[in-house]
Amino acid sequence: MEANTRSTGRLPAAFLTPGSSSFVDFLSDYQPDLVPGNRKLPSAHGAIQAPHGTTIVAATFPGGVVLAGDRRATMGNVIAQRDIEKVFPADEYSAVGIAGTAGLAVEMVKLFQLELEHFEKVEGAQLSFEGKANRLSTMIRSNLGMAMQGLAVVPLFAGFDLDREKGRIFSYDVTGGRSEEHDYAATGSGSVFARSAMKKLYSRDLSEADATTLVVQALYDAADDDSATGGPDVARRIYPIVTVITEDGFRRLTDEESAEVARSILERRLEQPDGPRAALL
Image (cartoon, rainbow, N blue to C red):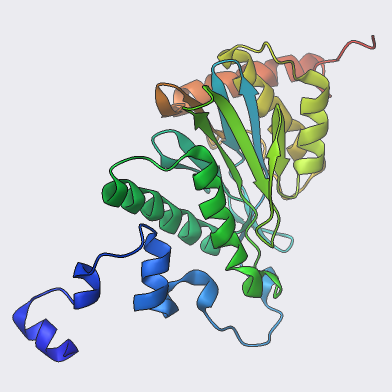
């Protein structure tokens, strides 16, 4: 039957049969070995040799949400890549920032993008924001076998909820458990330092520009204390990737815009190396 399908150039019956609006479910039925979490791995401890992405931060403001990531990937104590991209649009109104095993994370994001696009084509409408968060949770859970061998993927999901008319953030653990984060969030090796920075600087009345500055400040503090997180690299002109999602959709800051924010922070850090001070009372 399969050979006959190839010879006639017709699609297999599975592609023409109505079914689930989930592309991942379809792929699991038709070709399960292509689903990342279904792959069988040998019992080996080689995860440290795979490039890992590090710190992702997000913060909401009255008109939406900002999601940003540093540019460094590491393999153990070695810098594997200085300009890796860790923040990707999921669809028009949401984005994913990846931390963990870089190769698997990027593959998962691409599958997630296809999942949302497939749903919209089949159903004729976008999946709700909660639905998107749940779909990503299911995909992370399917990667649990690899996570137990050290190949974990732990993203941040952020976007503009058209129903609630505000920016929202979801964090995940390696089992696929999801938690809605209020105001700000961070994941990755430098997340403790980034979250501490945002805790002292965040306010709910931030403008979009201030929220952008906040997340870059947080990434700078993370890089200051975490060797796996890369700060702004002026010599190589490598700056954090910063994205903004509002009711108008997803927008990524240009390299020039990111550079301008980073340089303004660096100039102030020459006077205050530890960053801006929060009021004591």
